[in-house]
Length: 489
Image (cartoon, rainbow, N blue to C red; front, side, top):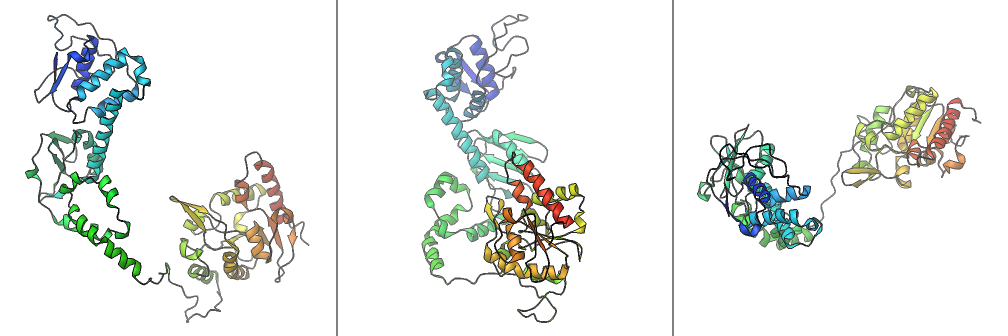
């Protein structure tokens, strides 16, 4: 029995004919599959679902006679996707292979659990090759702009993937009128709809435009000879694509010069490190190393320009305190976090939200406090795109100590509350065991300001869920003592 499909990508035709053949119990070895451009009518119902009603094409029945409805064809969900992908391969026997697998799935239930079956392995190889060709088309299509503002590209796919890939380019270049010509078919996008056409000839490829020259200039400038790996390049960009890529002409000359350029880079003298931010003067007059900020604005400018430790060059900005002058309490934390670094305000991240919750429960208005940090810049470690908090070292905290001292002098608080060990050490000038010294006022500063030590709110966030309620209540009790001043000497 010969089965003729409308074309090399007539997947719907294959589904229709395969369902009819399976219903008639036609064995795979009795079928010869072919495809061409002949126009055929008929239903294009899904292979996997029951058709509505009516005689099927070539059913052999007389007019008015209704052919018995074939039973539904049940296949694993992953096989449906595998079939649609494998049928786009250029392999001439792909239709016979996929029908044979459909037949075997109906007659050999154990096939779906056999990972080493030869037919199934071959189908997966076809599908994998098609998926790779789809990926390469998306990577290597190069558009050329024509005089009428249309963009045309020439590409030579290994398989019948033009229609399968058209939706990607329509979404990617939705605002552009474009066409992709290939020897396996063509597709055009007019800004609202896709139109598919016949195969094209390489002679229809448009000539280079001004954009190609800019692309070659950019490619030559980003080429890094020290990272050249020709074997990996050929694996990711096979040679069969090179003759259609403008930048391919630069690969060989740039590769020949790579060794010389790499050696020159190694032998070159080191360049001086570039400051990310220029220092900002504290006063209109030429500043001296002993310059002292006379206002909170000058304090912020000086902290922003500070490079006494490496943190200042990597953070987004310095984060000084906020609140009223001459407050009853100045709360000092460790350092700004990720959200504080971006916003330029202290205690606005998760720890700050927990502090706000505690203050609200105690009836302690936040705007009556001055909130600050011992270290003014965010120290972090990159994990992918995330910036994870890192505790500042002792030298980094000491380098920032002058800014905290200036801030205390300018704000003039009546009492200091140290949130955590870093803040306690900065305020008392010695190591502090927070758990053993928390909950009491300490009178050790030379300026006479009392210091109350308790946990940083981030310490509660790190506790296991079962320990958090008790720790929360004890922390609230600490803050209540700090507010009331009951334990002050």
